[in-house]
Every structure is written in structure tokens, then in C-alpha cells.
Image: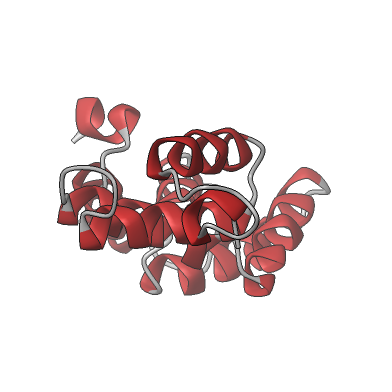
Length: 144
């Protein structure tokens, strides 16, 4: 817990808490994302913003231990195990991971996996690009 947020040993200062949580979140600190999300959700020390709180909570969810599997998929793809990579990306795309959606769509667009027919793959790729675009991925927004 940030000392400034809780007022532990110092005067409670939401502006300073926000500053330090923002700095920590830039380094990928999950608890900082969570605390920022809570501050935005409740309007603690700032204007309440549910969309910002949701985006920050999404960052928390995507940085859990299960996200290590995304790195496994990346390694599989890099090492030429495209089918294994695609299956992992497809699984995580169903869970809502934007990066998995775009990576699975990329593999399908290039026809690198034989798991689906060409037609099925292109239809699925379009759906995945649309999902990634809906989450704000700019490259998918341009392509869809």
C-alpha cells in the first residue's frame, strides 16, 4: 500500500499516491495498476472514470501468472511450432487477450497453420482482428 494513499507515517496525499502509482505502473508493477484502477473507480483524489478503471483492471488481469503461456506461444512460433503457437493464441483470444487475438489472426492471415481450412481461417482471422480492434489495437482497426 502506498504511504500517501493510506496516510501511513505521512499526511494523506492522493496526488502523490497517483504520481507514484503511475510511475510504478510504467515499470509494469501490477499492484500499481490495481491501485490506480481503484482510485479511478471510486474517484479517490481524481475525477471518477469507469472506462479508465476498466482499462487498468484489464492490465492487471493480463499480467497474471497465466500470461506466461503467451510467452510459451511466442517461443513456439519463433521456433517454428506454429500449430502449437496458434492453439495457445486461440485459447487466450477466447479469454479476451488482445495480443493473442491479433497474433492468432496474423497466423491465420498468413496461412501458416493447417488446423483450419483456408476459408475457415480467413473468416476466423477477420473475427479475431475485429475483436482486437474493439479493444483499441490500432493495427487491427486499420485492417478491419
